Picture (cartoon, helix red, strand yellow):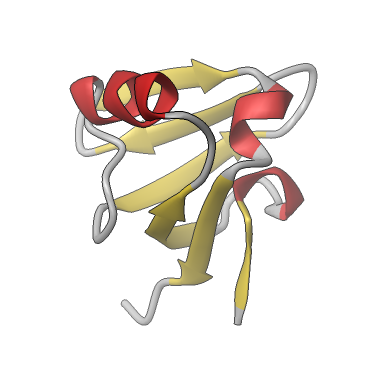
Length: 75
């Protein structure tokens, strides 16, 4: 099931499927490690979306999280 990162709940483990938005946004997210195929763990969803990727914790504005499409992790 594909959904946006914004629709996830704290504790969800998801895999990035694709990133919408302009090229600058895609490049910015890629520069901090958010790329298709990367597994993220959602730590919180309000007031911003906080995700963990390996040992990196990132806070994303809700508008940006709404453009990151994810699928549930199988592992």
